[in-house]
Image 1 (cartoon, one colour):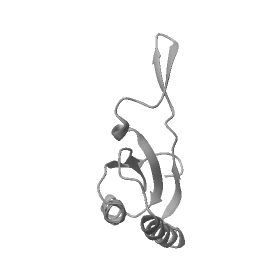
Image 2 (tube, rainbow, N blue to C red):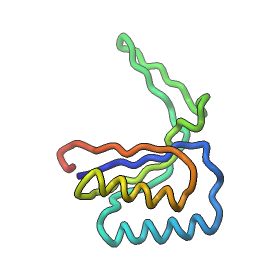
Image 3 (cartoon, rainbow, N blue to C red):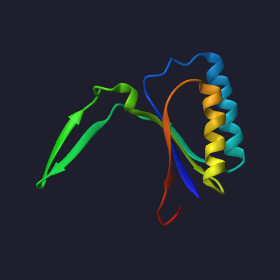
Image 4 (cartoon, one colour):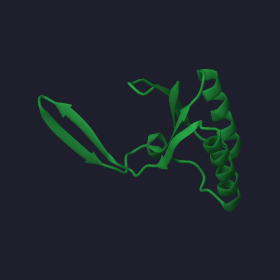
Length: 108
């Protein structure tokens, strides 16, 4: 089962200790074959489609705490395992918000 774990903006800035701890966590998950991809995201462009027309709105957006700023794509045996990994992630990062969403598709 694949899951996309996301982190919303608005948190405290990272320090060297957080980078080191997160680096060890990422390395562990990569070696185990659990972490498929990870990355940060820019503020992006919102796309709305209506009546065949696109409306584009460039960020930053009003509620920066709701904007997804990074993600991790993982492959695990169950949602419970994804939740356990998210718990380990948030123990390193501290306060914040994000989502865990199952990914469906031909390779999932």
